[in-house]
Length: 195
Ligand code: FE2
Image (cartoon, rainbow, N blue to C red; front, side, top):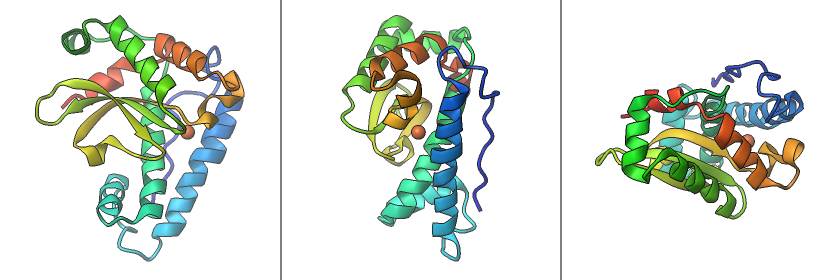
């Protein structure tokens, strides 16, 4: 059984950019909805005793779309809750890699926001690291798709499904991305995810 992960902050702590009302819908309705649906789908199947990551990888391999989509949405949201937080300084180790692969941190931020704005429909934007070359890059994934099945190490993500920003920003995805990229990226989490 997959257990929902608690938010790593109180739901009013990011109030200047994401309201408690946003989490009331995004966490309680959307996220817990995916968790409940996944648990109902995997009950009594080969997936029932697997870790969440194993369910994502194996259901993708088996073309078991319904299980994969729900498992991946749970995984992506678990990762998203941790990818954002209170404003913090980017550790030197990650600054060095961002400078190497994007020129500087500001270029990365601009490209990351642009990736979110240009993603057509629902999906996710990711800062990822290549498993072989260790190079950092930005990835867009559609719907529930997840970098784990594409040979990439996820470092950070932002949710660009409309439900992630509609309550606080209405249809203004750019404003949502600008605010979170400026104030709320959890650089320490990203650094800890480096391969
Ligand atoms: Fe979401």
